[in-house]
Image 1 (cartoon, rainbow, N blue to C red):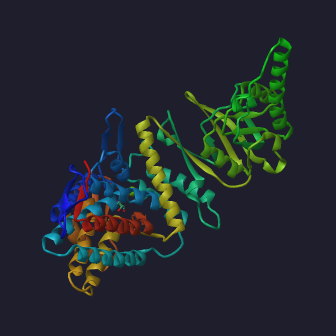
Image 2 (image 1 turned 30 degrees about the horizontal axis):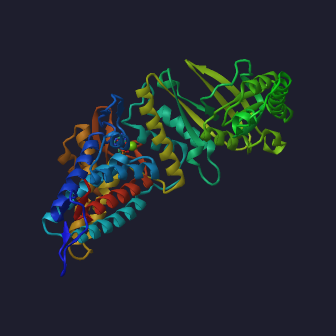
Image 3 (image 1 turned 60 degrees about the vertical axis):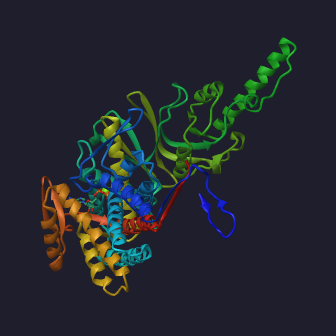
Length: 522
Ligand code: ADP
Ligand code: MG
């Protein structure tokens, strides 16, 4: 294409570049974004359905989790890709509410299309949406339940986040209890650190065998079978260098001209390896955790000395073991000092089918817990892992941040109401956009109603009426849906999840609306 100035045209794009401008660009972007949101809509809420995703290699994922669906779908359209990012932001910021955020973003786009068609300028749409988001954020804050978050309430929040996800043969309450105990265990005055609650999945048992381990699990087994497999009050050393001869690591060449020289060289090598093992033994180490390799001969010496050694341990596990036991990660075993060592109440190795796992429990320095998640098949296990991951996230977020609000569509209805009544003070056409934002929010309780098999229009009318006089949501229990108090029925979501959904959906929708020119290189 060319730019027609006063003099000669200036060519700025290649011949093959595709260009779509103005309303066409908006329409195409909006359609793509809406299509993506629509794909996850039917999974919302406790009666939401699952999706089965099959990739080009035939790999199957079965899930109800918004962000997982969007990530597994092979989405190429750039505007649609922005909706995937909404879900990803939601997941990384607060860990739950990915379907909620995507559905809201899709609705905001649908309403924006309407507004643009009625000649509302994109800038007014952007302004109105931003104003509505701010009113909504304030309204979420006002909905936060008063009082301290006790374990009962936290279990409720955890269970709410897991409903609708396939949790195998365990009920959400039992898992919620494990999750709350896990988070409470690592909680300090400064709050709970999400990373201190680890999740380890192990296939081969019913989901109900899922348990809480007060420590770290690494899927590495002792380097040799003749090493100890169960130690109490163990002294732990953590290293991140190889225990092999320098030769292999630094390419030293021996110039061997006689048998004597060869023997001397081998002796030198052997004594170097022996020194490694002796250094470990002399430091009083019971358990050696190494991020790198350990030479077979060193391993034999270590086994002789009664040391349980693990090699090629994942970096994240190495760091976790060091943190929990109070050990410092050392580079050279010759330098190990007493201060570098950590301790654990018990280190033991357990066999699970084909695999052996090492448990490092009761570290002296920091509380770390692992939820050992079990499932009969890898599909069951993956979905359970996602459900438990979400539950840990919401409990941490509820404790750390802004508290909890009533779920089951109650928050959305109240927030939409508040936006409608305050939108009146917004000047110009942006007011239309703020009203549209409120209508977009209605889609969430409407979708919950649809997915429960209730009549969506009646449900919405009744829900609004019920909220005039009290607090009400669309509570699903078993096969039925009814309008009732979410707090009394234990359906609670973290306020941060709702706040983040308003923010990320608004960001994506306004970004897409602002685009009026798509230039694609071929
Ligand atoms: P998301 O990815 O947005 O978290 P979910 O499928 O997990 O999507 O659904 C979350 C919504 O379901 C929240 O609004 C939550 O309050 C609601 N919810 C959870 N349990 C119930 C229930 N028993 N009855 C009605 N709504 C529920
Ligand atoms: Mg959820």
